[in-house]
Figure 1 (tube, rainbow, N blue to C red):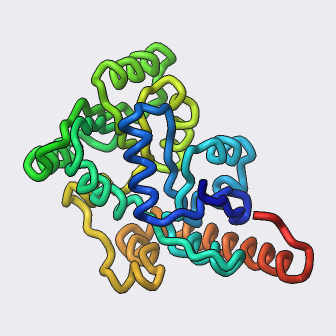
Figure 2: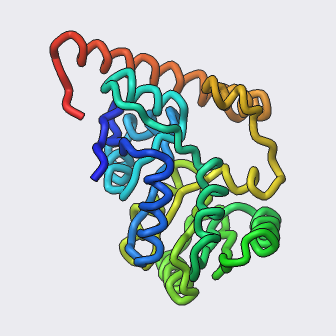
Length: 256
């Protein structure tokens, strides 16, 4: 069993990219009710700000270091090497991994119909051993209890063993935490990976990903929406990380 490392408030799994692919694959094929979160600095601070959200995230089967700062924090705090496991990288890697196996059935939940249609077309044309069991683009409003029940029943009836959830942070993480026990599949909160995989949105150049600047690329694309988020959350993340680092290395050790 892989170790969990406390990054500010979240318990992040110390696991390699390859081991993660195997774990997620096993969860899906054994139809284990479970959910996987890909966390970046923004999500860490969302959890730090909300005790309920923190509790929901920490019940996840896997909490993965999506953002470069989170992956680097694992090393700077605990001297543990941690691969960056970004949802945008994990989604195509998982599809390639599952295409070498049989009976992989995907359910797509979230995003716009145009995006879902593009993803279905791409998967159907590129992956011969993966079937699309269903796809739902839910309304922006909150679903009623009856609608939530119908949705979970629809997923289970479809026979899906992998559910890709793209409702946006923190909505998708809250939804998975509240409903995963009722669904016989592994749920993956891949969020922004949908439009990138569909070819509708461009991803940052590789050098920006390497140096942890993917957030800057997104900021330049959507400055009005993201400026406050990145300015505030990145600053708070850095402050709290330094506080934790000083605590660890001044003798007031926090256990992982």
